[in-house]
Length: 116
Image (cartoon, rainbow, N blue to C red; front, side, top):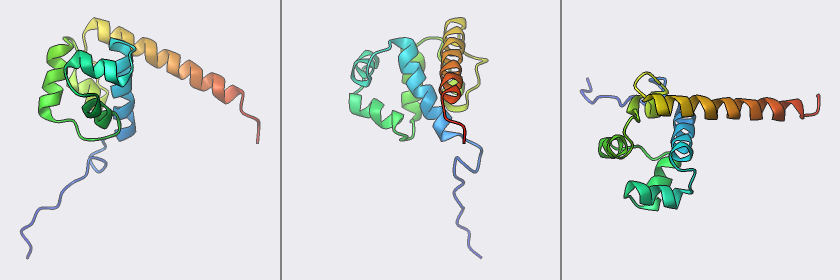
């Protein structure tokens, strides 16, 4: 018998990587609306490091703690899982506003698609 443990992927646990990446981009827009380089400078990290996160590299515990320290009211639960319960009122309001705008844009785009 093998005693090696099988590694469980985040997808097997129900983690939605695309939604997580959207939340990282949304966070950047909520905080500053700046490009990746300026946002990373604001956090005190390299632009490459932030770009890697937005491209899907795993977020370390240290990076998550840095975000919470530099952005009071931000919640790792929201970043990773989309749960808004621990967001400050400011962030929760901004998330709802941006998500509403995004949903409206999607609906408008779908209305202009030709019928098949």
